[in-house]
Image (cartoon, rainbow, N blue to C red):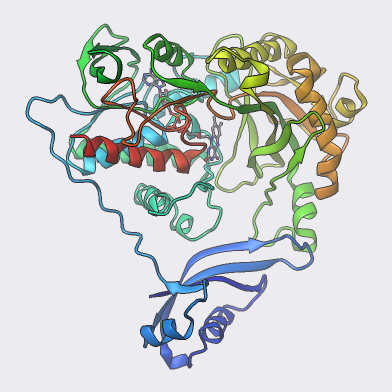
Length: 535
Ligand code: FAD
């Protein structure tokens, strides 16, 4: 097979135009092309009046060697890469306890699936509940202002991304096509096949719930075992320094589980676990992250700003955006986790705190577009000398947001017009905020540091220049968006293990090696491969 990349066609091209474009690009006669298959389809909307579709196409041609020779040196006509995944081969040494995965988020799930496929029958320890029970608890915060600290948007089967937009793309370098393997496993678990071809796939929240259950059934079929509502609270260790080895896990039910090979995939919100890791003298560093607000606009405003007359075209769907501004105080301001046609969600895992994030359904049909507008936090400036200072910093502003919202899990909110004019909001306008259980119009400077609000105030007019309507008076900002990524990075060596605790494989977003569902899944596969190689 030959893959052509970057084949550009007009948005409204007739179906047969793709075949014609392939023939022209390869410079072959029609009978020389046996079949073609779209490997990827995206669009380029940089010029609003001239949006084009961009394809990668796999072509089955009669004389592959001749066609490739004729295009030698052409980066966009190459052999189709082999993206088949082969699980690691390993056998558990006699007497060694089964491998354990801590955390059933995308990282832990893909790690456990890979270990199960390798025949290693992992045990998965998850502090939260199974995904169905967890859904009930998550909705209780949104609908009744009742938070369950161990079962919520952050904690429980499926991890942080379960109630999300389900965006499945990532900018990480992926020479082994592990991302493709994650997507294939998701399709097997019930995700629509289109995620394999669309350049920015998403699946929405409800499908994720059933997919997570399907993958659990597969892991159990292969001999894996889940333990829900069980938190890992400590390690049993043997030896000193670089010779220190893991021997067991202390669990919240009082049990000590023998364990010598463990993947730690606890996500960015496991603050008590981070404290336990610091106390266990795990090597870790404070890591930059970002904080800010969620902003909401009518989706129609974003569609027109991005697509002009093509807004609403079925090939484009609801428009997304990506914005960056480098503020004069030295901080980058950028849009984060943009959810077209979605809703802003309550995402705290701790009592007396308010945290925002975004999600959407597969249809992306809700009235508002939302995204985080967040500002860089720099450990060396904002909390030097404390490896867990980022966690305390996040907590401080999450508590301030709880108070500013009315101390009842309502979130503080402000109209963009009021925010830019430096006055508190007393009411909201045409854009109805989607955050549940509700919002309180107020002044967001009460619950964010000045360097953040200054940078956002400077950025909004710049974003308006790139996307007309972005700083519209009635756009609503809801606070605070603090859980953008992990505030720490756990060190790991070239074999994927903690340098100060042999047998522990830190992985995923919490360990600082992923930022999103797909990259967390990829890192989970890598961790499983490292674990298998260590046996
Ligand atoms: P997590 O998903 O956080 O999973 C960690 C798991 O470990 C949790 O289930 C937790 O309960 C468990 N755990 C923690 N501590 C312990 C312990 N001590 N013992 C036992 N279990 C423990 N990313 C995208 O790519 N696309 C999106 O559209 C998207 N939308 C999002 C929307 C929301 C509302 C949120 C909150 C996040 C979103 N993300 C999205 C981010 C994405 O969810 C994360 O990047 C991803 O889930 C990280 O995966 P992970 O497995 O590393 O960690």
